[in-house]
Structure formats: structure tokens, C-alpha cells
Image (cartoon, rainbow, N blue to C red; front, side, top):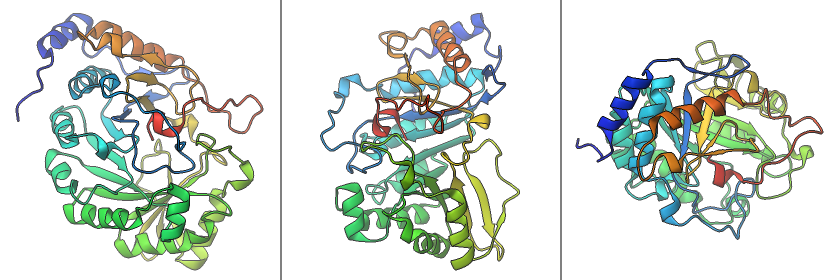
Length: 349
């Protein structure tokens, strides 16, 4: 595979002078950060009510980080312990030639896990190319199996394409395919059982996510479907669940397996049981803003240090400063909580 024409020799020389292995990214609470989420676009072909407003103004393409710039940043970040990368959006499959970026990132030796989150609508035509380029895992958003409800939740007609995308992902043979479902009380909580059964039949994991205050619409805590209620429904109506023993304790999801061994369920209890104490993530937005938390109120602009030339030392300093300034937690359940001005699509899911 040919290499992107980035200033690789300059980066290598800079790292040699600075010290390529001078420590991991550790915040003041002792959390080690090895997980990087990269938004490749703020555009999406859906308008999910918990994510994106209908009348959003998209970034101009010139404002997006180029594949060259993303690759350069990741090559620097891995020297501070980043070894997991997830591509997000918006809808990442709207970014032209995404498999090219996947190919370059998969060639970075330090990256042990390269994954993507998608709504699946465009996956049918791209799954095999992404797998061949080196994408390890894929997560597909699926909040309903009812076409009319899909239209109501996502403001676009796309359930059939999403289901085709799930099947295409299975055929492509990724190491792992997961479904993400945002459960909203009074909206789609009546489908918890049917969605769990669907995933079990497909032999893929499903993760249920508590409704969080970061979407386009006003958030109501009363609409949060608590994790314990989700688990009770599945345990009672789908199959008995027991805690999984072989999962990463720093991952956001609590994982459970069916007693009969046929399937897995994850629960992301962002509201009722936040996982902030074990958070290991940092994020960059599509236009190159570095964020240390999904709910951060401040961000740092990487772009001036990636274009027109790569400033390795400044990028390392920015990474370290961002992580050091990270909060203990997001404060959902306190009166101090302030909802970010960015909605989910503009941050990166």
C-alpha cells in the first residue's frame, strides 16, 4: 500500500528529539487514555432526534481534517499510548473513500483495534472494502424494527437499508459486529425485547444506551429507561442473563451473556451508573477540535498544528494538556451540569 504524502520524516525526527516514549496520557485522577474517537464528518443521512437538528449547517469540506492530517495526528498520538481508534460522524460512510483512511490507519503498528460506528444505511456497498482495508469491528445504530417508528425517530426512511447493512457486515466477516440502541421511555422502550431477540437471532451483540442530554431536542430525565429495567425485561422475556467475565472493565458497557451461551447484551448506563471513573477516551471532531469528554465545554483546536505543516511538539503538548484538564465526571445528576452547545453529530458519536 502506498503511503499518504505526509511529512513522515519530519514527524519521526521530531519524535526522536522529544522522546517517542515519554509516557502515556494520564489525567489527574489516574485514568490512562488509550482510546481515540475520530469524527470524519459532521454530515449524516438521518436526523435522529437525540442527535441532530433538522436545520443544521454543515461544515464546508475544506474545514474537515484531511486523511493526511488524521493520519499524521494518529501517528503522533500512538507515541503516548493510543492503541484503539474508532471512526465516527455524523455518518462516517458519507466521507468519500473512507476505506482509504482505514487502510492507512491499519498500517500503524501500534493500533491494535480499529473500529467504526455507523447507521448502516450505506454499509451494504462498503462493508467488504472496509474489512479488506483493515477495519476490525463495526457498531451499527438500530433503535427500532418498525419502519414507521424509524421514520419518526430518524426523520428519514431507512430501516430497510440499515437491515441490509447489518447483513452485509455479517457477511463481510468483521471480528465483531454490535448494535447500539438508545432506549427512550415512551418512545421505543416497548421494543427492547424484540430488538434483543433480533440480535440474538443474528448472533451479534446488542448494547442498550440510556438516553443522554446531548441531542437536538430538550432532554427529559423522565424519558430515561434505566439500565436495571432494561435488563429485567430481557432476563424475563428473552433469556436469563449472567454477567460476562471476559470484558474490558474500562469499556462503557456492562456486559452480560445469556445463560445458554447464545448471545450477549451490553448496557451503557450513562445516566444511572456513569462510567466516568474508568473513562479512557479522547475525541477529535471532524474539523479538528480535541475534546477530552463527550460533554466537555471547552476544546482545543488541532488544525493550526496540522496545516500547513505538522507541529509534533505542539500536538503532544495539546494532547497532554487536554487530558490533564479532564473532569472527574460529566455531572448529569447534579445542578452544576451544563449541556454542551454542540449536538452529538458535531462532536462525534
